[in-house]
Amino acid sequence: MHALIVVGHPNAGSLTHAIANEIGNGIADSGSENSFELADLFAQGFDPRFSQDDIDAFEMKAPFPDDVLAEQKRIEAADTLVLVFPIYWWSMPAIMKGWIDRVFSNGWAYKDIDGEKVIKKLNHLKVHLVAIGGAGIGTFARHGYFGAMKLQIHQGIFDYCGVEVATSELLLLADGNDPEEHVKKAREIGAAIPAKTTKRELDMVG
Ligand SMILES: Cc1cc2nc3c(=O)[nH]c(=O)nc-3n(C[C@H](O)[C@H](O)[C@H](O)COP(=O)(O)O)c2cc1C
Image: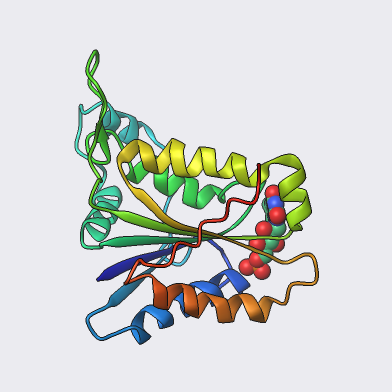
């Protein structure tokens, strides 16, 4: 199994990066047949802006820009995506949202032709989501933020393209949670990814 771990945080010394790295170590620990590549969107200088070239490709009037094609190739080489991101304004950060806007485009991730049913094109792919947030679980529950994230990200993005959200983790810093514990848990998350047996989906928000 090959995983593409995508991380959207500007600071390589951040908790988000530590968690992404440990997920990679967990995958590597789980057997020599398993491998991963880390896609550090900031370090590679990924441009998240949806430009006129992206619109032309979206409308199938032009090929995808080279940087989008390169990302699509990396995803095509993977069995599983792992998105690791800090929660900003109850969603993913702009760089990761822009990565999805540009890369998961019409014609590649799905096909939307006027008057026809949308064709999901990524049915073979799974995704594991690992979101790191500063708020407490009570805030998420009281306002339904996790439910809102699930609706938007699981259903609105991945289900639309046929990608199964295999697991979804919420790692929170409030409530006296120890960041080191999250890093430890990240290794377990990584080790469980190849088998895809552990369903860790959080459904705490009604
Ligand atoms: C612009 C911005 C928006 C944020 N919005 C949220 C939010 O909506 N919910 C939340 O729980 N934490 C929010 N946070 C806190 C971050 O999620 C938290 O600081 C981060 O995940 C910590 O990980 P790090 O040490 O890797 O940066 C926000 C932080 C920033 C900078």
